[in-house]
Structures are given as C-alpha cells and as structure tokens.
Image: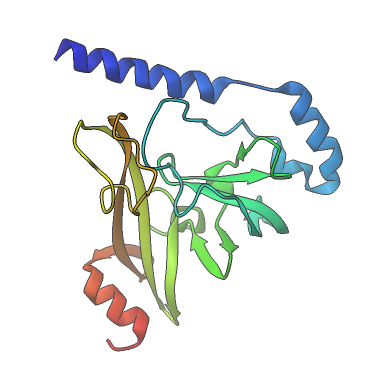
Length: 209
C-alpha cells in the first residue's frame, strides 16, 4: 500500500508541476500575434501530462482541430480547439506549435469542431453535471447528449481497447498508468440534464423513439 501511495503521489506531482510550467515569452508572442482574439490566450497554460502513460486525456484525439467557440459572450471562428476530458476544460492554441491555453469553463457555453457540437449546460443555466456534452441530436425542447470523461488509473494488466476508448497499435506494455475512458448519456429537457441509458438516448438521437 505504501508503494502504491508513493507512485500515485509522484504521478500527481508530475501533473501539478507540468500544469504550473510557464513560458512567458511564448505567451507574449502569441497574444501580440492574435490581435483581437488575444482574449482567448490570456488563461493559464493547459495541463501537460508528462508521466509515461497509455491513452490520452482528450475527448477524441490529441490533435487540435479548427472550429468555433463561444467565450465570454463572443464567438471566435477558425480556432484550434480540443477538450481535456480529464479536467473537463476547453483548450485553445493560436497555432499548432504554440502552447495550449485553458479557457475558463464558466465562460464557454458551447463550441463546434468538425461538425460536432458540444455544450456546457451549467454555463447555459441548466442543472447538469460539470463539464461538456456532445450534442447527438437537437429535437426542439429535448437534446440528446453524450458525456466523455477520463480518469488517471494504474494497472499492470493490458488496458488497451475499451479501457482507454480506442485500440492503440503502439500500446506500451511497460506503462502501468493509463487514462481510463468513460461515457454516459443524458437527455436535456425541462431545464435539467437527466441521465438515461445509451439505447434510449441513441434511439431518440436516431429519431426512432
């Protein structure tokens, strides 16, 4: 037990230290380059997970893709975006080789990337768990939603595939730390998010319910 606690303590330290790492000259450069959109890049540097691990903390892919985000009541288009599903944070980059910045969750009601829309029900005034939800279907007064979350776990066993949310051909069998994938489904109606079974939500999203 003592050894396990020590490992987890070191793991937490790696995360905290990387989250606090700063690069002032990089921030000054892209804030100047970004012009009017520089407000997006004034937040704290996104957490970087530096320990050896399998899986990743992002919603779908580690790649930042261009999309639109509503932040502090203004919409910004053509922004490089991603979602940290472990911290439930929207991340932005000015350019692929720039550091990622974490936006204030309370100021981001929605974003769209690659035709997929995510909403933050809490920021929109609805009763819901914290974080972001993928909109599977918007049918008038009811929205079908999917929520992805990640947790840092440790296991000496193979956790490739469903445990991390995808099959990794380069899975590192020597790494015991992994990002555990979880998903849940909700219906947003009458001002609140209600958890529902996957089949029911998918039937509603497909228009068969």
